[in-house]
Length: 295
Image (cartoon, rainbow, N blue to C red; front, side, top):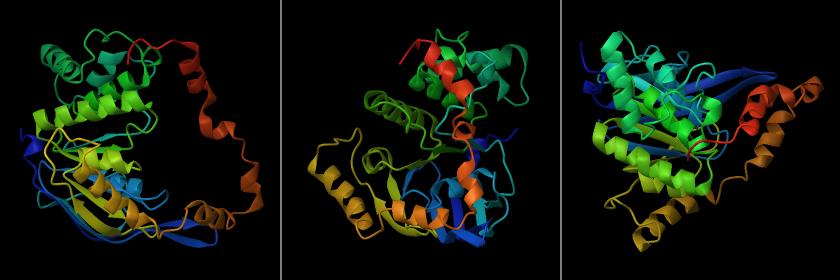
């Protein structure tokens, strides 16, 4: 069986994506050209609504209707596959399965002792040993994301896609998780693509930082981060790279004004949708009622 990590570089050419909306189409992506080298850690930054997550979903094979081409290792991406794993901002663990069952669920084509061994190996790798029988509601945010990363790595993908995986974590846990993902990246040799709003995080983690323009999203710049690891966030070179990226956003609109313009296109009845429909109160209550077991 071919190892999914044997895949080569990711090549995106002239990629475009539009969505139907009341009053006409909204162009999310336009003319995206990007190459990600095998084993590279690429950070992707941009303002809200610029199409970062849409681009990640296309690479993952979750969006298949688009213009242009996307190839991994010379093969066109036509849908989801074991050669790509994805981690979302919410851990998305199955609440009725415990930690080891959540990871085992993702393992394809293996059973018995081999699957058990692989689950234990993955949980050891993300430092969740001792919590195998815990359920998602019993875990802290950082611990749950570690399990989600283990699940995404279960089939040893060549590319790991991360859509703001640390966005909901507190500052200290976020720094720890950044260090954890770097440790895993160095050990596995997996190509990693991280979507983030945090410029400091992008510079700390990435070999390069791809900067997206506002909608319709394009790759406005790709900034190399030629700094040794571990990186000093307070160092002059680090801060200058961060400033270069930040200065590129200064001429872009605030973002809120653009969103107000988009919402004005929707019929008034949309405003009547209950807020509860968006926050999944049942799951939220579960996390509030139980104290976390780890960090």
